[in-house]
Amino acid sequence: MELKSIKAKLILLLVGISAVPLIISIFLSTLNTIADAEEAAEADGLLRNAIVQENISSLCQQNLTALRTLAAQPAVRHYLAGEQDERLSLALRQSVEDTNGIFQDGNSLIVTDARGRQLCRSDKLNLTEVSNRSYFREGMQGKEYISEVLVGKSTGHFISVLEVPVKDDNGKPIGIVQRNTAGALPWWRTKCGS
Picture 1: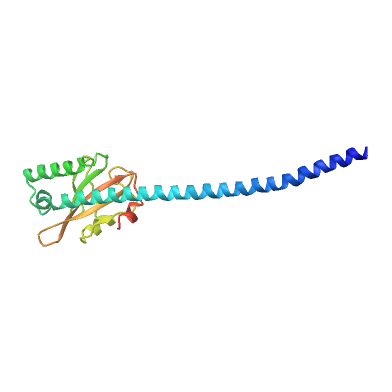
Picture 2: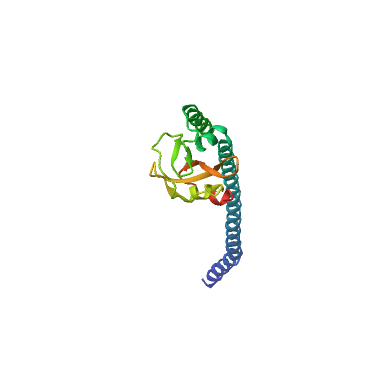
């Protein structure tokens, strides 16, 4: 009987001795796998972040370029300078619709005079007065600006505003052109350099 007991004890001892390195190996392998998965997830997240940043920067630059082009158009400049006849009014509306049509994104493009009164909107919503908005004040100082997230006066939705001043022949601001981005992309402000 004692022989059987010694044999069983030896078998258990051998199994235990061989199991300990196996358990340690499995534990260390699991830790390494977790560390590798975390590194891969971080690298993937950084790559996705870089792609999103590049897309946002590109979208910002496209919007600002379109606004700069619109701000330089004679119809816009003459209309804001006070030549508000029917021909210029139609030319202004057409310029706004053509420029906004480039994007096909549902966001609005607006022309505002030096007193903060909106004169033309691509979305045909009610014209409002924006002289108390920071983007308007910045524009009237001759600066391009991308706003913080704010509530749109015409829609009541969260928006961010990209704005470019319209200047007369002497370089004095006579109004602004702006694009309201629905959904308010607050990171535009930092990614676009404003």
